[in-house]
Length: 535
Image (cartoon, rainbow, N blue to C red; front, top):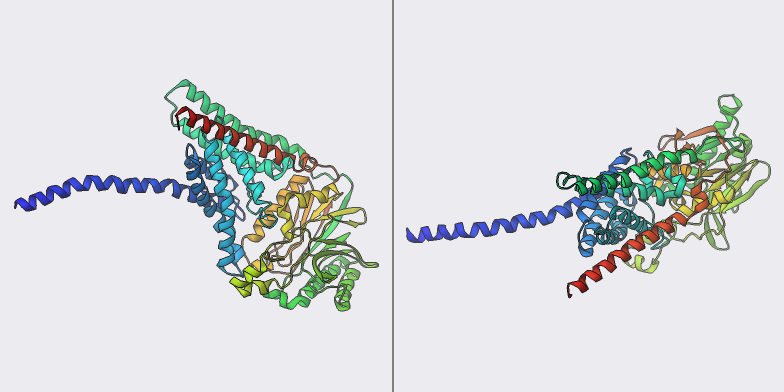
């Protein structure tokens, strides 16, 4: 009996010491789980959903877990936030090639978010930290848009705000200013709630909470309202009637390329069907016609039969056509837009400048081939880059071209406008991504670009969704997916430039300087603190 009682007593003495340990471990998991879940919440704010406002609580939670922590903790929490956001956002990259490339892309891109997390944690101890933290986020986006392999800006916060109240800010300072306003509001919400929880403590705290909420939440919202005047649907240099052709593809996925002539025939057939409707008075005669990227993967300069098909379609519709072709010159491949006149034939060309890594060219080909031969076979020959911006002259209308992937890059769209574009066209080929969210994410980018430069944006896509977008970002017409269809509409021609167009990269540089100033201040304060503590 004595032995038993002693055993029980020992067990009673041991249990209290183990329970706190388990509880502490669980508590340590809370910030990590919160960081990952807030990343998922940010993903949910992106198209095709219209829950743009969820970006605010997502960044509020992210700021909550980072505030006051060391840079190492910020690095890990930032990486978890990046995984939670990018894993579901970019799942479409593995639709046809499997999970390997998708996961590899996310693992690399999340490193940038991890570095941002470390930076936000560092500046979170400064006064007005939401301002510094939001600037650090934009600095991370700027880096991600440039490296590696000339960058991958997919998932910029601005691209999730096509339906949001902050959208007019794109006309003020482009995607950096729009994204900064959203992140600032999110971090400001975090700080306002944090200080608000201590509402009854001091009058100073109450004033700080109110001031911070006003600065970081009300100011961006009021600025967005004021920026609405920068965008207009008013025609400045006349109007043009544009036709967007979606010919569809013979089959989904990467294998659609095996029937290149069928894709060309589909787009010619839909153009001829539209021509019949025009002659019957059912639709207006277009001034020009826009075909999507890869609508003629058969080189019309080297294959007379392909040229004849395009010529016949142009004659039927009695209007020039912008044709997306794959062209070989001097042994090099180009993703090219070709202006095909019904009387003169090919008159202008534009070669895509921002070609897609692992889709149109393969970096580290020998290394990747050693890992998986099938990946190298998907990109047998790299596409070469063009060097000049594309602006086609369709009579009195000048149309700027940003081919598919290029729409994600600020410079690739802006310089078409600075070179005289009155309309922007984003010819795309999304057939390789099936019915994934990629199509809707890219369509949202085009809506942001419309507001950024106050231009109508047309989006001709091989398999959908094709659309016509007004300068205020509103979609006036769109097609379904994997159907043959056409859109015809009179659109305004605009020649004035928004502040975002005029300023170009300057707002981004200004925010980078703010981020650098905040990080420098935080590092200096940390060093002074260590010296004072005798460390």
